[in-house]
Amino acid sequence: MVATLVVSCGHHEPPAWDAGTGSLSREPLPEKSGTPEGGSERGTGNESSGDGARGDCGDASFVDPGTLPQTRERPKTATSAFDARARALWNAIVFDEPDRALTAFFPLSAYRQVKAIPAPETDWRRRLLSNFYRDIHVLHEHLGNRAQSAIFTELEVAAERARWIDPNEEGNAIGYWRVCGSKIRYELGARAYSLDVRSLISWRGEWYIVHLSGFK
Image (cartoon, rainbow, N blue to C red; front, side, top):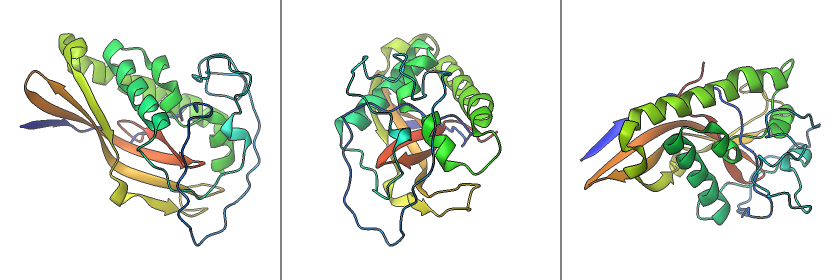
């Protein structure tokens, strides 16, 4: 019997990328990809300035993906990088520590390139990241004192619902893959449960959370 907690698509801020662990699909796509401009700014730990929150363990070989152009690679989930981000998200919920999930959130450096809006950094921090932190706390409260007894199963992406978002569809300067209706699946005792994940978007062939529970 599956109990589902619905997590509405909220505007959250993107996670940082784990260097060197990505796996990209080579599926051809009809539209030419853009080469957005980017920058870096020190802030919450998802930016290109290395402060250890990205999950790169201080590796000098780390390259912030947000300093690179977007690609049209369709993201895969059967990779070690995706699994690591999914488990980081789960641990953040279990321990009520949102910072643990920053690697799963869409990077600020990439968000600067994606959004054709004034002050994307402010939108990322005050709306997306703030909501992401809020949602982590809410989901932790939902699990309550059962949190550390729950067993993570998977972050199930509804791949059949994924679609390429063209420039200008969502206030974006460049395109990306987006998928809604994914689920965090876990077990507690002999029962299976799920938490809904509202929206993930892609950067360079990797899925990142942008809205965990709501859009506002």
